[in-house]
Structures are given as C-alpha cells and as structure tokens.
Image 1 (cartoon, rainbow, N blue to C red):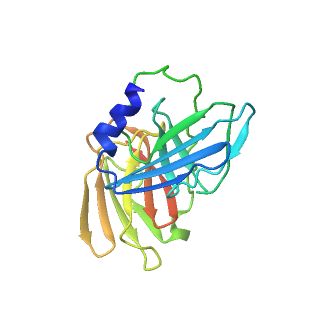
Image 2 (spheres, rainbow, N blue to C red):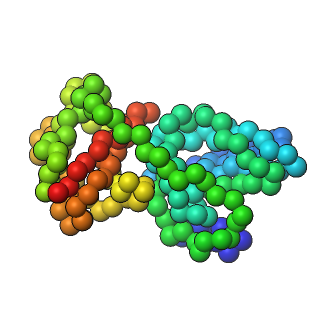
Length: 199
C-alpha cells in the first residue's frame, strides 16, 4: 500500500484525466498527470482471465512493482492475468519501489528492431557513430512526436536532442558507454525502434 501511495503522491497527485472500467470481475483504470500515463489492470476472479488494458499508446511501458519494461505493440492486445494478479504500468520510468512487494512479474522486454526504418520515412546516420546520430524524417512522418533512446534492457537514458533544421534532429549519446542502443520514435499511434551502435 505504501508503494502505491508513493506513486500517487509523487506522480499522480495532479492527475487531470481518469477513466475507469470497474464492472465485471476484471478492472482497469487509466490516469494521466501531465505527460505521464498510468494504466492499472487487475483480475479479481479465482481463475485466470484475459484483460484488455487499453494502453493509451504503443511503445515502451514500465511495470511499477518490478521496474521491468514491456513493449506494447497493440494498445488493445489482451493481457492474461492469474487469479488475484494486478499490475500498474507507467509510460515513463518513475522511482520504482523495492523488489518483491508482489508475487507476480512481467516478461522482460524483447524490443523489436526495425531493420529498414527508411520504409517508415526515417533515416538515422551515421550509424555506427561515436555518439552523435542525425535523424531525418520525411513528409509522411509527423514531426510532433517524441524521440527517446533506451538501453537494450529498456532503461531510458539521457540523450540530449537538438533541432538542426525542419524535420532534422541530432541526438547525442556520447556520455554513455560504447554498445548497442535503441532509438524509439513515437508519433501518434506509430512506434518505430531503430538500433544504434555507439563505438
């Protein structure tokens, strides 16, 4: 209970939007506070049940009790919950509580990488790079989305983003160790992951 109260106090106290599905044996709740979306699902039956989480968008989400990321591909894809199982998902990393508070977990993220981002109107170069990557979007891609960089375990990293010109951006991960990273472009309902190699 203390962990849930901490989430409410520190992140959701100013929630400006809330929707609930409380009829039936499975329940869901959606809260929005600024740019933080939270989805809560639970199964109050004595047998396993499938729940439609109705995530607000595709992309990476985080299981609050474990801190593990999950990749949401379809916002209405069903989620199977054991009897009594519930989850709180946030679409941004927050201060997660200590491990072991609940007896259930989620499958660690298996991030799907788009091998040819050009077909979505996205070009990233140079790749590999020493840490500076340019991103160009063609006219079919909305330029009012978000660009974030993650490790392959789903942890969001600090990656300064600058605007070079119209539909041309530059991301800097020079401060991070060499290795593989994931650039995620979220635009409306579209979420594209591009592999970055820093060397």
